[in-house]
Image (cartoon, rainbow, N blue to C red; front, side, top):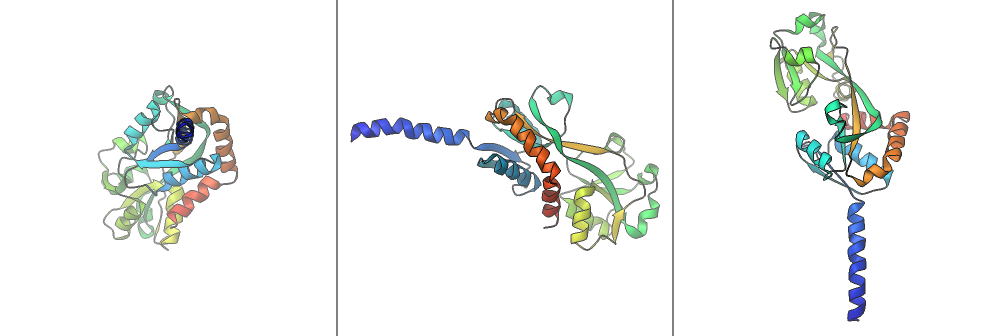
Amino acid sequence: MFLKILIMLPLLFSYYCSAAEKTIHAAVAEGFIDGLHSKYLRYIADKLSLPISITTIPFARRLKETKLGRLDIIVGVQQNTERDNELVYISPSYESLSYSLYSLTKNNDKFKSYPTLQGKLIGVNRHSKYFEQFDSDREIIKIETKNLEQSINLVLHERTDLFIHYEQSTLALLKTLKLDRKISKTPYQPNYNIQHFIAISKNSPLLQRKKELQAIVFNGLLNNDFLRIRQAYYAQ
């Protein structure tokens, strides 16, 4: 009996190690354990037929942990040359988003060009970057908000003049809140599209499944899965 136990112990140890290796390790922003990025990550894990463990850490640390291989995958990253040697990007990008400006519909005509934004109170997401001219403009008073709903409420109650957010999320939430007639896009709009990628660590076992991940993203785009996930999340 004792001999059987000695034989079984290495087998059990091997089994649990193997199971641990097959778990995807990922992280999202603090306070968003059930947020949109978590939805995307669980979608990917489901398509790979793998369990996933998601924790919460700031974005800069997420990048570092993914680079080191302590996290396998990260979503919502923009491709840039500084990270090309640190991460493996999964092409194509899983979403292309455009930032839009919104105000009370009755005030829309006040914002027909970029200069009309200066001196105005504009709700922005904390830690977000939009476009260089806007980000560096000190004549615009930027009010940091916790989330899209807070940005909407500030404009609704005229505590800010406008807010800026992804159009694909905003339209869905305004419709859900039945505010799509009270709040709408301004005549002036920045013409910038943001490509968001899924990226994996060069030190992750997922690297062996890169082609499979590319196929998952491609089919997800073809079926509008990522857009549906986004719209459903903001319509909750």
